[in-house]
Image (cartoon, rainbow, N blue to C red; front, side, top):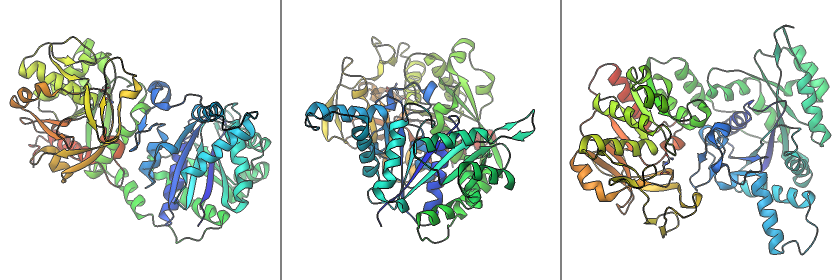
Length: 549
Ligand code: GLN
């Protein structure tokens, strides 16, 4: 069938969970046997989200094809089987960039280049190009209706319905129905305003998802329906839930997927949601609890570790355990030493990161984990910290460091590799301190070969894996032999053996650092093997049992 399109927009304010709502719609439609893809169009002017500050914008999510995208792509991949690629995330900046490049190249033959039709055409082209081969595209428009930046996107999706036919397009609008305590009432006015704003640009939403603290009664639904010109059944409550994985089930109970199919004239089987039900049951009834200390920099904004939090939660599901994460500021560890949260943790994790802030604190946390046999999981920068700590305190190279922080160290155990064979481009890549910062990143999926009889291989149970990368610095092979002889085992490398992908400690119950970001590939229904084993080790540590099985 030719693909159908669902456009999700948001009103009143941001952070209502549009990404999650879109992902949940995708999950429900997949449960009915349809194939979907999701795409996000972000109104901000930055050309690529990779260079944005995680404090402001949350995590940078990396796809297999090496795109640095908005964190909503993570929700899309965790909730559905959609393959999210570069073309699933565009910004105003990237769209304008393409249009301006086309103009410079002469593609518009000297004509006047305008927002309508040139920018809107480019947006429509991006939408069309994302949906090849699937039944349905779910396109999320970032930002809030009423923002200046979103106008070209709204205009493009308005035109889209005329272009591809009314029966092929559905507009879903996510809005807020706040509870006003002093009045003891849920208020519908912001929703009315937001919908009228949408209608001003020519879009009449078909379905409203109303975020509320309290479920909407029939009377309120009818009122919203009347004022917003939709059917009362099309007013769906998106009430706050304990776990995000409950959202698809809540939507389903109110008939959302049924209505979508009816309105788009799609015939499907009834949805199979047992996997989701089992997952939510497990999340709500854990038999165990485990404490993980995450020692990092952006600890103030948990959104910047979104995928990591989810992957830890999935690792918990695999072990029937609730994972209680405490975020420890590595600068605090630098100042005050091992804080109580680290001391009491059943497992310690140092996540990815950049730059010098709090580095010594992270290294102290690694040392504590190594010496006290606390399960340790180091991801990317966390692996670098583990190698530096081992070089300094086990091998005795006191000045060892990563060249990222100390370019003049006599022991650059982590460094910028000048030349390496890139499996993605199938070329020898070269880089140095002066080359363009972003351009020199190793980004996206790369294969690794696992070494038999290692903790890594026993977790994955295969020999070849593919994981996603986002970094510049690498393990330095000049020090490999000495580090290995002292007990730091290399358990995964690139297929040519040149790039170290995983290290682990021989003399430790569970201590592993990986150069890649496994969190991007963990799914609630398929917890990532390294997170599963890390949580299992933490559980055993908590119970005072030897960790290795
Ligand atoms: N800063 C390190 C590098 O660039 C690690 C990056 C990361 O943790 N993602 O190599």
